[in-house]
Image 1 (cartoon, rainbow, N blue to C red):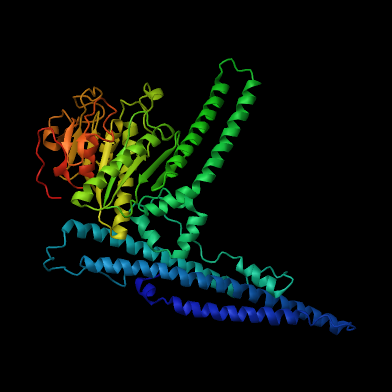
Image 2: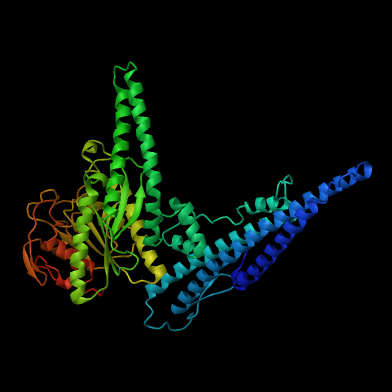
Length: 564
């Protein structure tokens, strides 16, 4: 078991020196070994002595082949280890810097010790920030040791196999060919992240990888990275974009298979029509998914976007696309839409809405400060559809899809927070939810997340009974003429408008026409108007997203005095 003391003592430079020496030795073996191979047979020499010499010569040549193959494999692995160690040691240095900043020390045994134990903690260190940092450091150290063990185990394995003469086939025609066979061995394996890793553990894993190893993963295993909450948005987007061609090819195969099933069904006597119905359903699903990939490609083609989620494994494609750079944004708003939402039918429209929101947010921060903003359209769940209304498991009147979506959305929020923590970038995170998406948002906020503010609009119910958002930072909007919101605690949770506690918990925002520093803004009405690009409603979202609630338009309520 590797310790942090071992990691601190590891020397990539020493390994690089060994690699250089092994390269030199391997080249000598190739040159001299291939010369030695040419010494027999000797023309005109025959008999027992010649046969004995030939047998000895073949044995020595096979030995040279094995040694050369082992030396080549070992040299490659040692070079990989020298590179891999730089990633682990860099992650440890970053963790130690973070620990020092918050009053902790990482010991050689891997413990995170409190340097203020028994002493007064400086007032500028927030207790909640310290507690969160302690958790992060524990995760960081655990992953550093996990990756270090992986490097140590793989290198030891190659050393053992080389010592046992297990490289090369022994049948190569030359020593050079044997060395080439040795280099084919993969050497160090790339440490695959845990399938159950938390959004906080994923950036800890990524941090332990060298630049070269990250590039290899992006090239060879984008499927490991694209949907991994906690990784930087730029990494996820690059990985997901790389996945698109393979996802499209797989769906085209499914479509071809469905078309073949339809042709087969035509020749089968089936009075119920079930076989043809199933085949047509599979064809429609494949076509809809391909249309979703088209919508994603079109949206990403506008530039300035990041593809943060791509999942084709469900009945309908799920995706999340950001406008702006989530990694560098101080303000991030995540919008979750509701009933009838699909990627192929809804992404383009909502992406434009989020682009409008980002533009309005930029107008506000240009005047009042607050840093850059990024906005995200999150269609990361199976939103209820019209054809599922009668099914209790899929109905818009049932909370089941919202609960499942809320679990995923909470991880997405936490992933954004973990990514900002890892890069030490300030974050003001706002949750936006419309219609059934507000219920999904509410269930997400029933978890612990880094969300600072939440706004629900056109909401049929907030999902969870209690939303874990700082006091005074819940907002709602209700358009005139929006009759799709209940005034009771229904199946989708308490109403953010009419529940007994709504007036004390939520700021009721205006959606009337208004005059602001950005000019005259439109009123909105009905259930689908909240995201109008020149509306008071969208302006309110921009003000909340940028951390300027004092600029928003309210319905006769005052802003809570909770500190921001």
